Length: 479
Image (cartoon, rainbow, N blue to C red; front, side, top):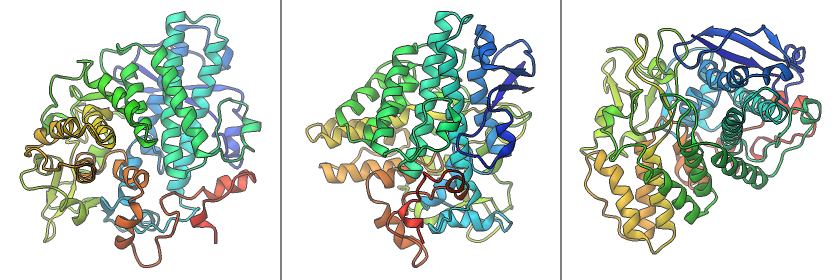
């Protein structure tokens, strides 16, 4: 089997001259893979008009993005696509801390201390990877519009996947940085000098792309496993986008469509089964592509007995679990190298060896909690919101919620999201930001003077400000 990776210039990195030499081509690079797709070897370098002359090469262009998402966390500093969103945003949310002493520690510690600087290389990679993926999705959308040899059914599928992926990238960029340039074409010279677009406009584009993706995608997965987005994958992100924008009824409806589809099991699986590759709860997964390796979490979070883990879960997080919560016993590991013992994330159990786990991007429990929150916010649906919350609590081995009014129920849902999604895609950090509770909960945990108004946003990277004078810095980082 082969997998495919397209190298495309990062939209805003004028300073990265090696990208500029390839600005008019798509480079197809083959590396080892297990079973994502069967393709024929094309030439090493293909112009975009040649890529979109067959179903196989056009599909390869899309698949290369998913492969890069799993590859990037091993070769780059902070791709938001996978592991780094869980670890670095997890440190921002006081879920975990970095325990090792090495050259990365100062930049890592900035996330925990809320003392980020614009030259933090991990921040730079969040930005450059996000826009690198966006450039590639834009190239696919443009290429499909002029494709001569791609069948209509493949055009439809790939068009839906590309719009979903563009929305996915902008979702994280706008949440991490606030206003960001909205790039919808491959006109890189113009894109390099774009100013920041108001976040509200970026959100409009995210929702538009996801609606378009839903219209183009089928409810069936293009692969035997859940490795490429389907219609419900777009719905999952759309439900989240509606929730973040306080469009409660629309969030409820999108989540209900997924829950009621019957595609993801009649009941949530037990905690030990959630993160396996055959998980019935998974809505969209990414397949590991590194030989003899499972997910990045399995490789980096897990630790051997009597060994200090790389990342330690904070006492604040551990205290959030109720007695008898099966997630604490199943999803958290403990190492006895020190007293008290070190606690670390252990949702994924496999590191090296046979492939037993895929990387989950969206799963069904989130949809129950999205619907619970959306219903609670509507006021007259308290019982329905309690029912959804209790689906997740029951799977964890907990009794039904005792929260009986809107304020207490919303806090109960927030707490459930904390214990359900810790060390997973930065959920806690984004939740505290969107509910305006970050300052109240995180400032007391930060070193004196580090938390500032505006610390909920990451700084615009130095390299980007130097490359594009039209960009401005977020307020918390203007000296």
